[in-house]
Length: 247
Image 1 (cartoon, rainbow, N blue to C red):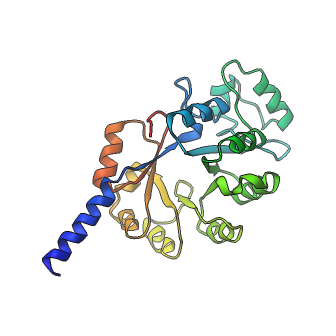
Image 2: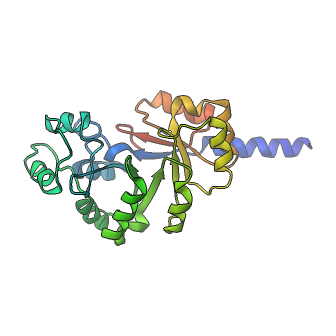
Image 3: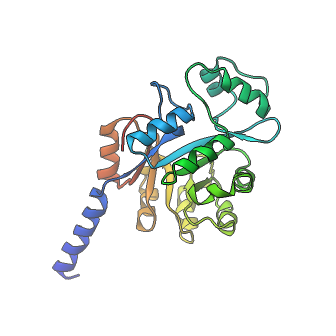
């Protein structure tokens, strides 16, 4: 290879790594020093801080509606002071929200209202159970928000189904995937992705570093600027989910 070509390639790689990384507000963004609120208040604060990519958690209610909640166990207890024996109905959840003293946790319906006023925001979805069913429900009940959604998927077979639903920007997040690292590299070769998202230790893997030939790497959840800088400069991570770091 000619020396000038080598210099050009090195320069392009340096530009790619040094480019400002994307910042994603995790679970709506931290609010009142609390993570995982998935609240309207957190959304408002994240927007004011400059976030335009916001990840939100969704859980199913007893009557099969979606609310912005990480889980009905530890997170529900942390936010509301109790752990229900089973998921609440939508009505019971809304009554609980109305009584919360510090913030308004949102439902799919109130999120849709918020997005109508914040048309420049895109929501990265995290629906841990029955993901495809949840995505379909969101765009059926609130078709106006479809263009603002970036679905995350957990298993490779979900990819094509989401493409068939009309989604272009998709993220393969790896925490539920039980296959090998090499299988991630191989299976993703035929995918057009916004990114592959993973834990920081996975981003350091030699095998998963191969993904950078085609895909961006996103990492969750990073709240230390020194850690972010190392992952960005040394391992080429270009997107970070964070509770408390600003864009």
